Each structure stands twice: as structure tokens, then as C-alpha cells.
Image 1 (cartoon, rainbow, N blue to C red):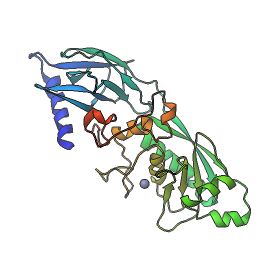
Image 2 (image 1 turned 180 degrees about the vertical axis):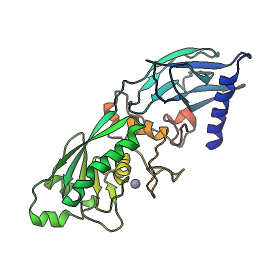
Image 3 (image 1 turned 30 degrees about the vertical axis):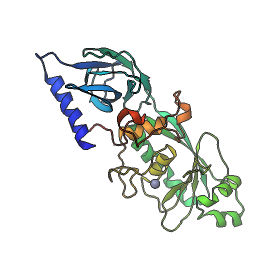
Image 4 (image 1 turned 180 degrees about the horizontal axis):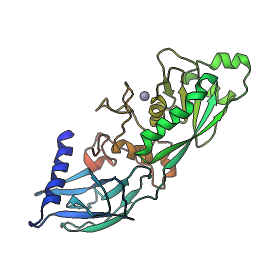
Length: 305
Ligand SMILES: [Zn+2]
């Protein structure tokens, strides 16, 4: 995938640097003028020299000047979509049929207003020792997901439990998710986070794997690292362990904090994301076995530097 990314960067440089030759660009302006850095994820039928291909590409920009993108158009199997990504702003899918087959189209798209898409993290303290560090974990998750325009709010409950239940549940795993919810609680529309003592080999867990009905249940143990919560929340937002890099918060190892724009898109819109029902767009079924825009979602590794 890396060569393709390099190619699009190279094309962008060539096109923005060309002053005399008639260029074969289209131009996208983001309104209202966005000062900070922002990125565009664009899908469509792109023209490179004489070849056309259905693809997703990413472009980055500062300020409100139009952004040059290679000539693109919309065809039935490959519609044009533009997604504006900016720190602290929710993503929004803009379907746009205004790109013609010829270069020189000028299209304006609207970014979402300032403000992240919010998700409540309802924390239930079974073992009290995690409660004091919890704010830091949530803050760390907020930093990781700021790039995606997603923010977490925290509410903490310390349910009164009989000592026997507390003892029995303090090292619970996902096989006890039902019990945890019954005895402690459950808030609809939120991520229900259970703070537990310890479980060998675990720092945290998301209980929604496969057909499990507990898509909203996350467990956190005392051995959690600074990014464990961000990682498990990522699972609740439809993100899996990425096959392509270790330098990523969703990698199985380490404490990396990076998310790609391809992952950000999925955390908003993919079927399986706890947020996808509230975006105003139909949840997107991503098919990674298909190439380019035919997969209906940007490639997981799609990003800008
Ligand atoms: Zn994981």
C-alpha cells in the first residue's frame, strides 16, 4: 500500500507546483474557511495520466485555499465522496456528484462544525483501586481520538455490592459480562466500563467479539497501561488489530497512540461501531477483500503524514 500513498503525494506535489502547463486537477474548497490543519479523504474514479481507477486518496492542507486533487469523477460503481477530517471535528460523509470527467472542477464542501462526536463512558467500580487513575486513562483516550473528532465523557459509579459478589467478580472476564451488568448496572447508548482487580495476562478486554451481545462492555484491570482504555474503546468503535503496523494504538503490543484516518472513518461509520447509529449516515459495511473504493470504506492504512 505504501507505493500508492507515495504516488498520490507525488502527484499532489507535481500538480500544485505546475504553474504554466494546463493542469488536470480538480479543486476542493472546505467551507467555512478552516484555519487549522485538516485532511480530505476522497473516493471516486481518479485519472492518473490516461488511466482511470476507483480509489480512496488522502490529502492534507492548512488554511482555506482550494486543494488540488487529481481529476476525478463519479461512476455508478464508484461514487465520489469527500470526508473532511480535522482535530476536534466529527467526520461527515459528503456525497458529491459535481465532479465531471474533465479537470478543472471546483467543488466546495462543508466541514462539520467544531466539536467532537461524544460517547459516554459509564464506569462501574467493582475494585476501587482503579478509580483514581481513571480520569487519566479517559484523557489519554481523548487525546488519541481527537484526530478522529471523537470525545469521551466519563461518569463513575461505585455500586453497593455484597462482599461475596465483589470478591467473586473482581477478576471477572467477558464470560461474566452478563453477571457484571446484572449486579452492577448498564447504561444504554454508553460504553459500560467495569473496573476490576486483576486477571492473569490481561490489561483490559472488550466483550463484543463475534456474535457476543456485549458490544458495549469493556473491562479494565489494575495492570492497565496508559493506552489500554483507548485500545479497548477502539474495539467498541469497530476497530480491529491492524495487520499493517505496530505503531498504532490498535496494535496488539506496545503503547503507541496513533490512529490512521482510515481507522477514524470506521470508528464513526462502520457497522459494529457503537457510534455508527448516531452519525446520520447509514452504517457502512466495509469489505476489505475488495480494492479501492469498491470496499466502500477507506483502506485502514489510508493516512496523511
Ligand atoms: Zn485488542
